[in-house]
Length: 141
Image (cartoon, rainbow, N blue to C red; front, side):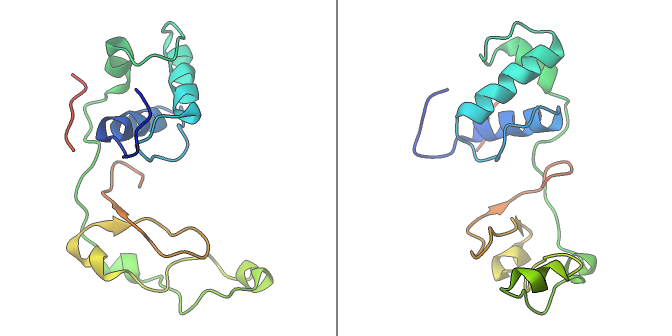
């Protein structure tokens, strides 16, 4: 796994597998980095594999559960039931809220993809398809 300017679908799949197995790679972004390497080493130790930080067929075999990595999701009425009228900019006022949710669902979400929660002060810039409880095509086998 080398460094690249674009996200790699195979790395996203690896990150999701590691996260599901309890070895969090940090942000699931499709990029190789220190957190991904630490997660690989942590999973190797958890699984009784040689701890070398290398992605091997043994590692993938132990990570792969047979569950789909991504899937489709249709936005339901319950998903939009908790939209908030606005999010205050004052942190003290934010603290009084039950939770910080969306004020609207972006139009692109109507197509069936769900948008990630935006970082503070920003708008969503992309969408993810929902995998298990979280949130290209390249095969590990």
